[in-house]
Length: 78
Length: 259
Image 1 (cartoon, rainbow over the protein chains, first blue to last red):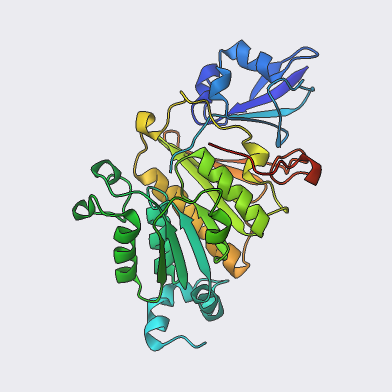
Image 2: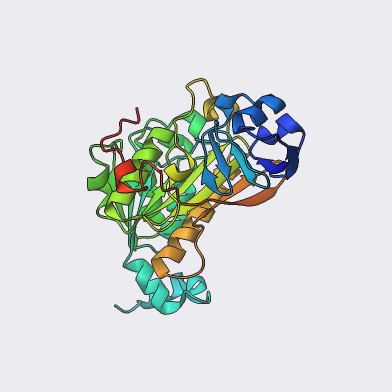
């Protein structure tokens, strides 16, 4: 099973991708967003929001095959 | 109302834009916007809205101009150091366009006063520099049914999203928690001055489209910009029924403290 992973604003560097570049990630049943972060060494504190198919999900959300995961770091300046 | 000959000349390049025209210009002159924060985002946003001929522009900021502001906060000049940002901004904006009434709110917009400040405006532009203020604005705009144009910047990147209350995804449909305290901010990672200029220009374009009822708004999608790779990405964002601010009424907590 696979999910699509995209990361933005610096988080993409953890898996050597370009900004917003799609990465296909193999997952097992019961793989959570946290598990994916762990796999790529992304500190959870650096993930301000995780969207799955456009909807906010907590990091303990169990991913389903084919879902699109988007990760955003905290960007708060003005 | 009729445009004066001076106004017809001043706004000539606006009026020629398809979808704007004389009627659009009149509508802008009768519209109002509140910009919360007159810093990196707020400076260019205020300049473009005033120049465009918005009738009334509220500017809210409790801060004073400092030397480290000047590489990006383009409303403030070297002799303004130490002045309240609202005062410094008002002087430039009034000089730019006397048609635009500038209303200064020289205090912090808080959970206690947000609704009162926002109520007098057609639209709210997020030019703040912190998540707690953004959460307060998001919630107050939902309560009052005001359109809210969110943006944020850091280093060489930025993002923007338009919120139409209870119709499109709101800020807290995406961002639930305040960032951890040790997460780097602009004071650590910096922000290149042109980045807020670019993102604020997007906010103003959204605001004018909303006020004129033109075009497709940046709703249910978030624009993410990365200056280093010069990539603009649009990310789908959906309303969340469990959103603490705009979700089902039973899920909405009252009186949240964001401090």
